[in-house]
Image (cartoon, rainbow, N blue to C red):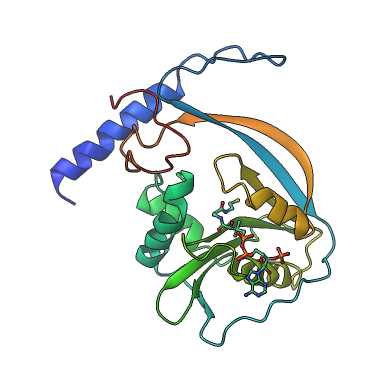
Length: 225
Ligand SMILES: CC(C)(COP(=O)(O)OP(=O)(O)OC[C@H]1O[C@@H](n2cnc3c(N)ncnc32)[C@H](O)[C@@H]1OP(=O)(O)O)[C@@H](O)C(=O)NCCC(=O)NCCS
């Protein structure tokens, strides 16, 4: 990696570290709390299912196939970016290659691309690292493929893979930055909401991890440091 890239990464890390260690503002639990410029916030809903639900049948087109991609980090990153940028998915975008590799190379983590015969159109990631549990880490479709059944197909695959193991709990979380259809989709799929949280983070667009044009439904407030 050229030195200029290393310096850029170090600079971003220092900025992220500095912002992460700022003193916490008091949260008003009965009203509004102002956020400093450069911060984004989301309401996170946690959901779980404790037994396998009755599947909603969906007949996939013959050309669709589910392909394991956890060993192809470049393909994984490209798919994560295409699906996630419109929804401000940043967790893996800001993650260094070695940290991502440590997750994806774990045999208890499974990442799949849904390929429609031409291109990758969906991502499914399952994490079995916690004993007796399965986490639906990511489920998403490339823009243009939402609402055509691919989400249902991926969910059916997720449920059958999760409950093929001796798990007591299958869980997921979604936030208000995600597609508004995600939460009702999870509930229709058999997940029950059980917890809610507020997540505040540095805007990854201002840190340079995502383009400033990403996720126009969440306007950028603040400037690049
Ligand atoms: C979350 C997400 C995967 C949900 O998928 P979706 O938008 O509901 O789209 P689907 O492709 O499943 O289609 C929706 C419905 O139409 C049905 N449908 C659409 N086309 C169909 C077809 N040709 N034949 C049969 N059913 C069809 C599906 O079966 C489904 O119905 P159901 O939920 O009652 O079973 C999708 O919105 C998405 O990728 N969003 C962006 C990323 C994101 O926010 N992910 C969540 C992060 S936590």
